[in-house]
Length: 102
Image (cartoon, rainbow, N blue to C red; front, side, top):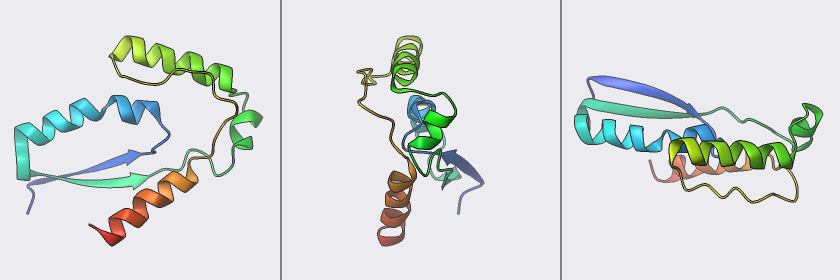
């Protein structure tokens, strides 16, 4: 049993979650089984239109990804996407995989 359990609130479509991965892996390496992890999916968008309605466009996404890649050294594809994408399906896939293979 882990001494400390960390609730990680994340979303597969979130570049900040992805850029935090090296830190999470370092904690796992340093503390091993003393740390437990619970991943909680936040679902940034059920529908791509949610982003558009808030003024978040593929152009803004590409610029934001480029900044994160540059400042944090993460290998993120910064290409302009043809459209925004909902993150709910990816969140459901993570939960489904966890239920089938904890």
